[in-house]
Image (cartoon, rainbow, N blue to C red; front, side):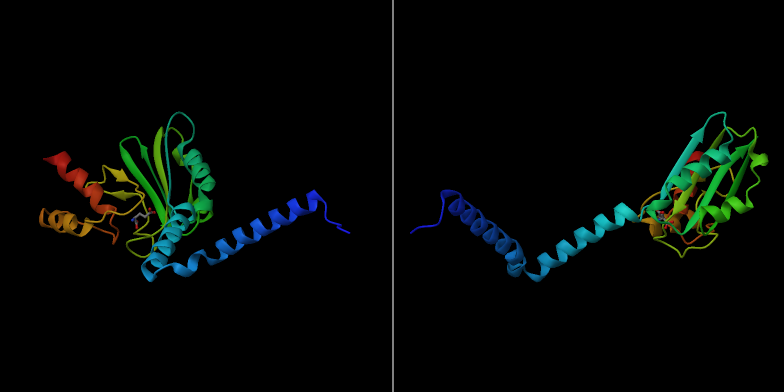
Length: 193
Ligand code: GLU
């Protein structure tokens, strides 16, 4: 006597299909060449890098206490991972930069919020070092020679070495080991000429 119903047969068919799918999935990698593996690993590491290790940038212009806004913004970006932190604000005509290796909380301990009352503009950065070790000097923002321009940056300037060489020939003093700093001097250079 047959004890299989139509529903049982259907279920068995689905199970066979699933196991075929699972096999295909668990076997897919076996045919990959070395270079294809390399590509996949590179892709995953890029996604991982950009998702979790990316600098944070905050900019503000307005009537609230600038330091407070910048610090709150940077705290919200901490999840990205970073090694240094800094802010730049304008008090009157004077550019004030506070930056250091470490966490936002370390900067907060040194900030005098009262000092920033009346400031209307500022930028903040959490750095994930690519060029130059994490230290106070390499932390962003970076400044031009005259201290008129402050800059924060995310990413890599591939040809920074060539730009740096030309800038030094034109008398610029580069303080940090970062690729970023050449950009602010380059702006200064074009601003002057
Ligand atoms: N390349 C720059 C540096 O190393 C910026 C890194 C970042 O995106 O935080 O300072």
